[in-house]
Length: 199
Length: 199
Image 1 (tube, rainbow over the protein chains, first blue to last red):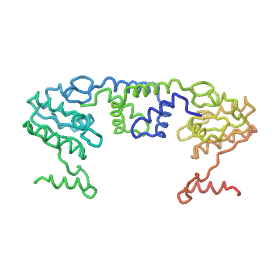
Image 2 (image 1 turned 90 degrees about the vertical axis):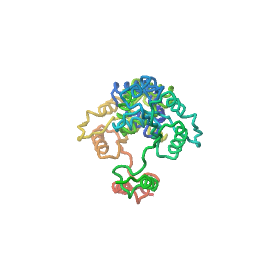
Image 3 (image 1 turned 45 degrees about the horizontal axis):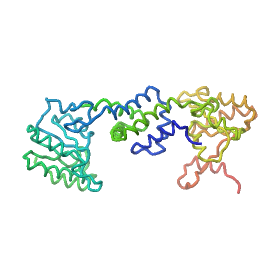
Image 4 (image 1 turned 120 degrees about the horizontal axis):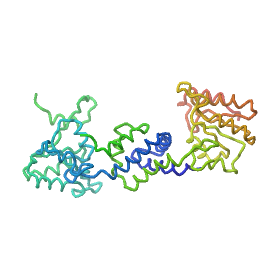
């Protein structure tokens, strides 16, 4: 005997999510059966709405309901700084900090020869265009991840932008706040020593 | 800045699932944005359909699209045996074995004084009724989980049914197939010795 079709289909859908195997998917599907009908319906609506109502901002590439996004249209923000990130969630992480008031640019990926991703596959041309059309931007802060691909992408963009005379910076690498030296990996320690500051 | 509303709502829905915290929910929500629109739509439909199209079988209490369920209407199955389980997923687990061809009865829970669950909160009256209306049933096999609550529920049902003259049995407890004695817990070893069989 197989699961009744409606639950088999739901298990199948849950299995497509990352990090969810068939056992967890089954558990989630049976949990769904016990949920409030209202909650299930709003879950279904949220799925469709997230897919349909969200677009990429035509200026910065961040996800947004309205185009341009709320950050790009906010003239009270510092128009001279642009932080370049890999993903929309990086924007959210930086916004949570509440200390940065400039603009963003979302690449939607990194250069990755292994995955066959070149400069034309990520939103680099959009960044170049922004710089050409907007002379208010004085500094581009590269905030790609501290992975080999993130580093390579940052280096590539830095080389591309430097001739245009714009200031290009990179986020500092070093020990996380609250971390123990004992447990830090070698690369992090090396970056922390390399980037040491005078007191 | 907050997440755009559609994604915030989706994160909120994912967070309601068991074992999914806000970080995982955020990851799943962003993953959803990258999914095929078709997959997302069928996910949404599966959610609503699982909730709307599935009912409990009026005979055995298992989840089913049609009432009575396919197992209850299947006259080729052994009508003399009924396995009593806690949850619909236990039926699926036993069916996967392909060795049992009798009927089932789903309790939808166990007796649990701590959670305030008494005999009237689980599907025991349904089982009594089935036995009263159907004299084909000769054996009731109690397959509640090997937890204190499962054991208590099994004992309770056994006491209730024995006077009616029906044979009441309990699944064997002992070492899992393929397990090491070294790693077995004390209770399992005790049950394995207690239930030892002659060769």
